[in-house]
Amino acid sequence: MVDLSSKRALVTGGASGLGKAMSEALASAGAHVIVADVDADTAEAVADDVGGRAWTVNLADTSALDGVDLDVDILINNAGIQRIHPITEFPLEEWRLISTLMLEAPFVLTKAALPGMYERGWGRVINLSSVHGLRASANKSAYVAAKHGLMGLTKTTALEAGPHGVTCNAINPGYVLTPLVKGQIADQAKTNGISEDEVLDEVFLGHSAVSKLAEPADIAQLALFLASDSAAVINGSAHSVDGGWSAA
Image 1 (cartoon, rainbow, N blue to C red):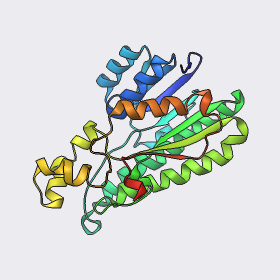
Image 2 (cartoon, rainbow, N blue to C red; image 1 turned 135 degrees about the horizontal axis):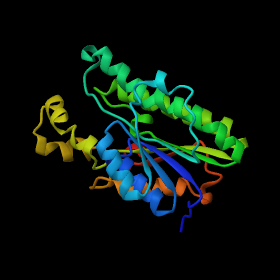
Image 3 (cartoon, rainbow, N blue to C red; image 1 turned 90 degrees about the vertical axis):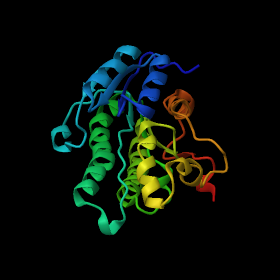
């Protein structure tokens, strides 16, 4: 059993999908969880359910976050969005939003959390990357670039933080049955010229050797392990949960 009863954890995008599942898993192990999300009502509801507290925050406003005091033992950078366009049609504003939310914000929060972790000689930074942090897909240039950048940040953080008793790792899921993935169905159908019913088999499972999608709880259990003392020497690693997509 993982015991995090003395730990404070921050989960970004913690009000739904993977973030909610990870918030619940950390709380079940005894951690005090801060549920960070732009959706105030949902964040409050999840925080109430897990006995933690909500932090309503717009992570796309990184200038307002720079210099924030972040006193946590576990930081999970999970918040993310998706936009699907060919490069020639990709709106610059959407590119910048994805880059800011999914790469710059994790950097700012990691920067804020590390001093306290260093002082205590213990810490865990877990970045929710993606199979797209390891390989690319067409029409997702902003997302792929941000996730590749997040992998670089993960490795650099691991090298700098490791001597201080702090680890940094990435979880790299394929498609997981979350609201973010469900919200892609119409765009994927339009982009690929197929019906919405065909998206599951031809897109979401098209690269997988396993004929099912991961559930949020699957990712949450891996995050819980990486936050535990049993993972003390796992550092700078990418943990794929993609049905074999990245093995091809």
